[in-house]
Image 1 (cartoon, helix red, strand yellow):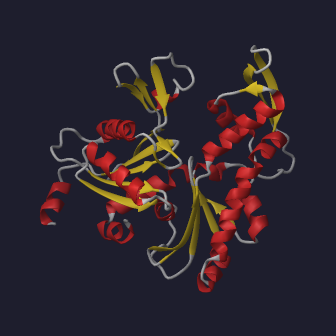
Image 2 (cartoon, rainbow, N blue to C red; image 1 turned 90 degrees about the vertical axis):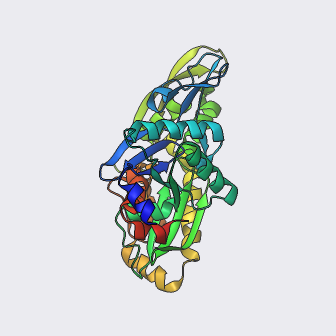
Image 3 (tube, one colour; image 1 turned 60 degrees about the vertical axis):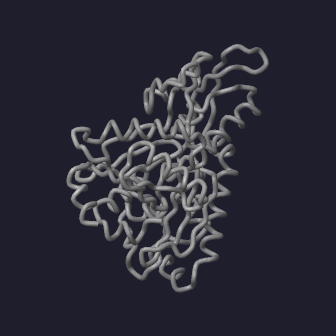
Length: 341
């Protein structure tokens, strides 16, 4: 233990939010120093990594046959082990002080419903990228720490982390998760539903990147007062094969997202139903905190207030909640031991 503590002085320890959509890296004493898309571009002829992060995301849907721009994370877990390892190596090399001769200690946020096999895959990928020690923290716990909830007190705190691949709902008390539920539904599924809706209604094929832009600009969970947004979208007409432009309204996008939002609402209700009565009474007073990129969907907090009759607040910076939480654990080793898997 003493030797490990000495090693800590010679390395820049890292905390990583290894997300389906984005990977954020927190460096001790520096904060979040990297926030890039979880995308890797690979030359299929040589298996050589050509680009990682933002540069690779710009290639999505635009590559020639011999180049594949892929997202190695699917539904919050590793879908392609080798490419995830290469992606982790890239991010670690980008932020770690390579003048240091000691490999970093790494803390990684993982979904609460992760299996033992998936957990081992994350550990193996981190080890392959050169980590000295690896700690895993469940993402709802990390998000709760990141938004500043008093997780170590004997009170019920409810956090809903809506990420790219998963939605994690958890009730936390005394530095532990009392009850949690996770569904493999999140921002990516919303994008897929928008693509499917436009394809069915307009016979127009659009890409995931366009769908994400539609979700951000005109997406909503409920009809908002005095709001009547719309936007032009470009795609390929499936009948003529010719590029075409149409205009889509926020009402149509809301219809496209309705099933995904219903799944999230139902998961929250099921979690509340299984929460011990004493903790449930705390949630009545303290409410529900929304984190993750999906929390930015307009009107989602209003919809949840209507559905649960509970106070609902969106975290100040929902996109970085998990990264800030794993970073906080990195700075406090006692806390890290209590909350890590």
